[in-house]
Image 1 (cartoon, rainbow, N blue to C red):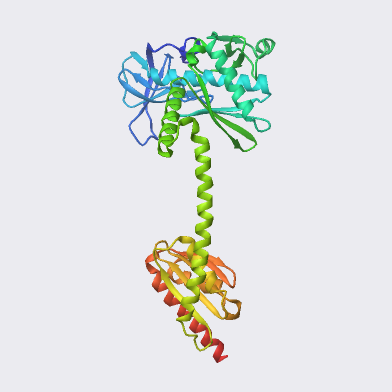
Image 2 (cartoon, one colour):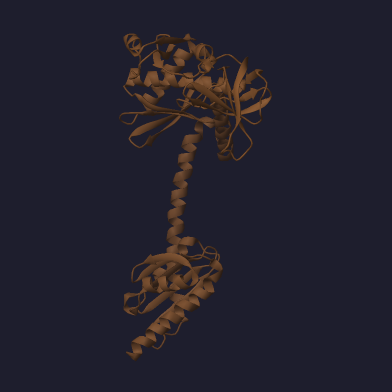
Length: 408
């Protein structure tokens, strides 16, 4: 027996009574739930990008609502055996969904009518809703224009009505997107703005949408995803935006309207300080390399090996110092930063070793990942506590390679 869908004709039904046609335990569910079928329902099932309703059936919590052909299946957390039961919808959730869904129809219509950007998909999320637009990247003018046009119609409080007809009937009336389906179709009409086949729930007038706020537009495969919020969501988003802007302005010691230029100045100062710090670190590394090499005697092969675990240094200093040491003839640098386990092995080409092979052999023994070239290799230990062990192993491998060369 087909379930009568009360929400088709009146989406504002909040409470209703119905006869239970069946109540069966869900066999494959990990929790105790029952599948309930009613002779009529106002609960909307997940469909067309809109999530399902929540609420109660005879005191049982409705956890999910599914559209299974002619029947609407309600997943409830308890067995409901009475024949005639009272049901109620979680109205704040439902009305929020109605605001978002009707707002989507309106926004999609404005993008298509005014800018030739058809909507190819819609998703109603818990915090944001989105539509995917087909075509070239929408400019800021197009995004703002679609939003402004939608809000103008919202403020006019135009009627939103349900129409029924065949695909041919709706095509004659100027449906936004024709569908290839037979039989009688349900469509939602926003007066003088949009006509679109849809089985979802909607408000009665555009004024009930409240307001529409586009959040951002991003690339999504071949399309462009436009995120938006309506009604109470838009109010909350605008309020949160204001609080963030005010907090940021207070920290920067400027008025809210001066935030953008203040951030630009801050970023410019940051870039200047970054370049200065980088230059100072490179200069410090050059000076330290000279001092370090003066204190190290060449080995029997005439190679000076700098092997150290560094602590309390900037991450990039490791590479600067290793590179500076490797600019000196017949020098090898084996450095590991204790805090993170980053390792840099470098050599002057005249040293005649292979830093990439050496690092890989060390990491195989102590754990980690890395690689590089013959003269410069970089990696990271899986456990930074094994830094000293890694350096001892690297030195042993170098001595072993040297001894092998001398014996050959």
